[in-house]
Length: 85
View 1: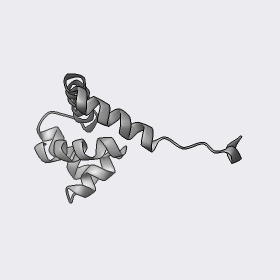
View 2: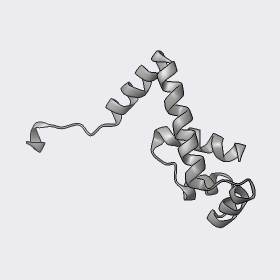
View 3: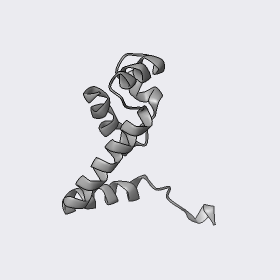
View 4: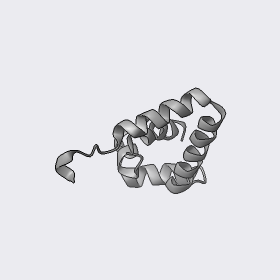
């Protein structure tokens, strides 16, 4: 579960925190990942929600990291141009 948490933390900022991505990064199928998590009493959704909550709390505690995340979000946003109007 710790390895899955690490992968989720890496993929969340990229918007790729899905079961497929995490399982592939860990070298296992979706089903095997689900089974491994179930052995530890957690679902993928619960793990994802927990990691999101931890990351959100960390952002709130760290103003510099919060600014970096906001800056990263604005850079990822689609840019409009005169042609779009």
